Image (tube, rainbow, N blue to C red; front, side, top):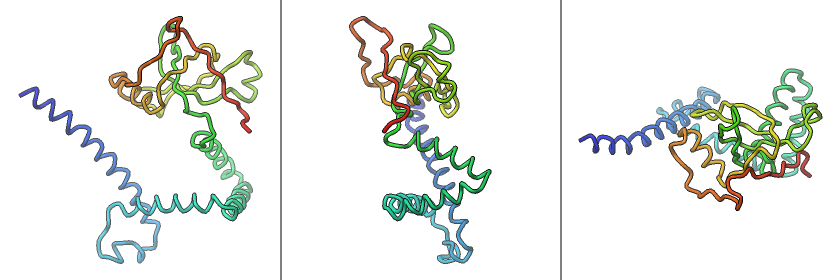
Length: 218
């Protein structure tokens, strides 16, 4: 009986959590419909609400925005919009800070979160998973001698919080592991091991020096 109960839980728990997360996402996106005039909302037009309509509308808006921004006219509109925002003191600081971070994280040419690393943290002999985010910049780089890399060490089981470290490149081991697999490994607290085999060099488990990404890509 215990065996059957555990088997049933292993089937229903992932399904339930998946449904709850999807329901939360769809419910949040459906609130976008509240931005429409009251007489243009589905309840006023059809007499009932359509679950998921807000999510479809959000995807359509994002897709259309990307489609417009990909051509010359759209790029001119974006430059004009950013020029307007640059004239507003507080909005300028928030907008450009968020834009710089999002461009770094989501740009296809960026290096942030493209590699999973193995680093010693919080002390020598204790190892954890980290992600390559770039190279040190600004005045901090001037005080560092040698090749350094910037890494993000996430916490578990919530990887959205963590620590930013600047470490010597020679102390960082690049893993034969995708970012998705590394995140699963972290969120599961080491329970879900990556299926990709780990390759070692001939000398054994020695740190492998990685080449820091170019901080100013062409």
